[in-house]
Length: 311
Ligand code: KIV
Image (cartoon, rainbow, N blue to C red; front, side, top):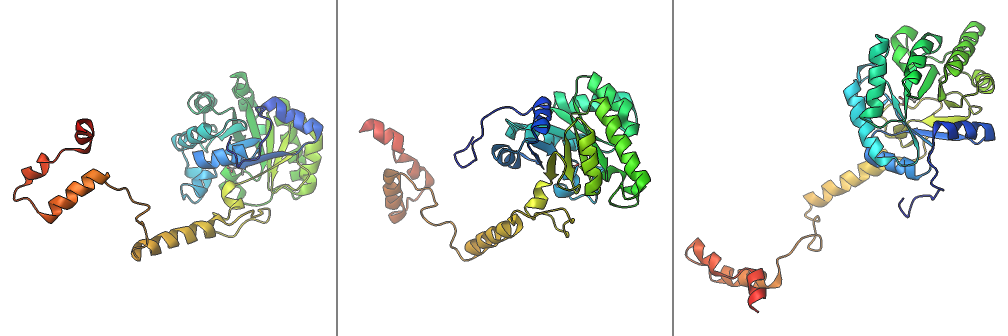
């Protein structure tokens, strides 16, 4: 842990310790991370859950939505994040198409995240209809995080990114979904884009910790996207996003300053350059003052190491 980081008692976060946090009513913090540097910063700051979200499709890879990102792309990022995370619980998002088609393939894909990426939990979107699959994956000794409400992988079915659970029948469905996933044994439950009142009821009704995003303050924990809190996204933020820093402005001014220093011959300075050893420099100066007529004359001069041995 670096000196600049906030020090925390190094107690590894586990699925069990998250449940204890819920019982103690101690808020759970979760952020996404997609690479080694971000993972280290987030982990060393004491965030309990690091999610390699499929939102990396947009934030890191520039895709329009999360639907295009593949298992191999996700694994590449999970492995990088794994190298940076020591204390937090590492959750890997199962990408669209990796679990919806064939349950056997879904278990194999979940196992790849654990075996190749050393993730501790895999996250799956969907409610009641995922119960059988979640049981299968849990039976394969892999903890699963549920994710209900506004599930971005269903964007085409939902007809856009819309807050879910606005009428009573939808509220009832969300409660059934949460209850079914809780009974199936999810390690935690992500609640995205639902009214505060509904998230509050679900949080009280389930034993598993709830982690909200756009679901109000009454969840057991909160998650935000790393790039959102740092203003590293290019569109207008969603209502629930709070900006905690402006990395885009910081990076832009650093990049512009570098460009301007190079163009104006201000970078690199002499102090930022490597120099010849004194003796080599003296020999070189002699040679440059009396240029030899053929190249082989350069090789007659002793090399600095030989000169040192001779002396
Ligand atoms: O992919 C993601 O970042 C997510 C969270 C925002 C819940 O699924």
